[in-house]
Image (cartoon, rainbow, N blue to C red; front, side, top):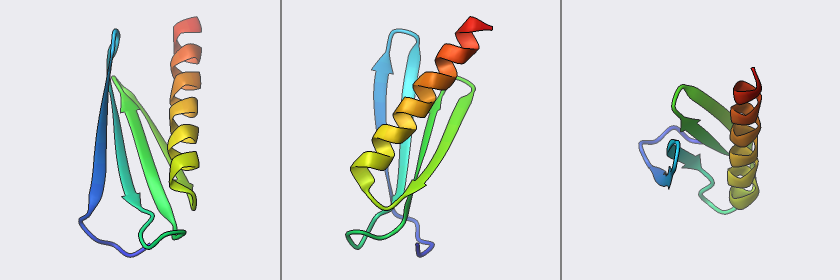
Length: 72
């Protein structure tokens, strides 16, 4: 992945806060990328080649972290 200043941001409003997704890379098609997902004080970093799968994986890991935090 080349270091550049281009990234996408997706904000997803929820009842308990705002989910923020920062998406770097994935251009040209099939190249390496990063997805950072954060909500409140929890942050997840996922790397991958497929943009859609990487976003879904980041959201799933963020959800799992939030569930584990609520159980404690």
